[in-house]
Amino acid sequence: MVLHSLSRNLLLLFLIFLAQNTFSQASSNDEVFGRWDLEIIKDGKTLPSWLEIEKSGFGTLIGRFVYAFGSARPIAEIKKNNNSYSFTIPHQWEPEGYMSLTFELDDNKLNGVLTYTDGLEYSFTGSRQVSLPFTHDPKWGSPILLFNGRDLAGWEVEDNSKWEVVDGVLNNAGVGANLITKDTYTDFKLHLEFKCPENGNSGVYLRGRYEVQVEDGYGHAPSPIKFGGVYGFLTPNEMVALPANQWQSFDITLIGNRVTVEANGKKIIVDQVIPGITGGALDAEEGSPGPIMIQGDHGPVMYRNIILTPRQ
Image 1 (tube, helix red, strand yellow):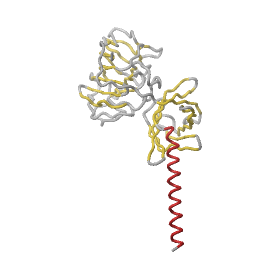
Image 2 (image 1 turned 90 degrees about the vertical axis):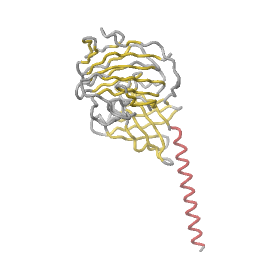
Image 3 (image 1 turned 135 degrees about the vertical axis):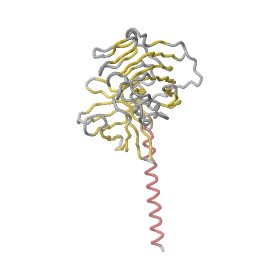
Image 4 (image 1 turned 60 degrees about the horizontal axis):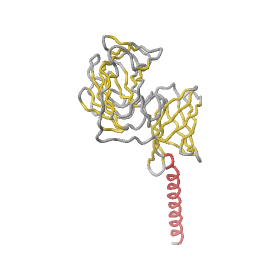
């Protein structure tokens, strides 16, 4: 009877210790919870990226990661060793192998090292994602014609650009540079029309950071990486893409980080929060105004009637 009571007390003490240790571990992880805008320094260039850290159960850390290209990737577990955190993920569009990140929190900023799939290491820093204000009843200014139908005035044109104006249409003849407005914007409504060839692929980046996918999506199921999706994050409620080589339209409203996408006259994403920057973003400065960027590095595509209405 005494032995039974002793065993029961030992078991109770063990459970209390386990609970305290789990609670302590969970509490110590709170410091890194949330969303982080990252800047990776690679070969003298800054690669904008993004990281989300959240808790599964009492103390297991999981998350999502967006590299400089590609879509958001799930992180199965983020491990903690003393003051350091780390995780490893398989390749996506990179060469074969694994990518790993190790980092510490210092003065509410992340400092770490990314080991690429080829084994080379690059430093990175991370700042907490800013909270973007939302206006429920915005007042809109005057519409701005971003493409005048004659030339590329108002757009940044790089040397390897394949963009040209043909019969009043903005035409990308092949794999080349992206097209970026010289002006920047905060909240806006954006109308644009586009025509994709069979298997065509492009995208429009809101503030240069959040890609709405433009592609030949006819006949596919809705997906965050296909027609009308916010790349890797938000899935349209239905696929409304027309067959290839037909003119189609987007009407996009962006207020703060909340987006509504209307495609071909149907609302397919309604007032949804964009979690963070998407792959290919120009920068990770989510609190700043940004340009409109049209993707031209995937091949031929046409655009016309690009009109932006800013919020007053």
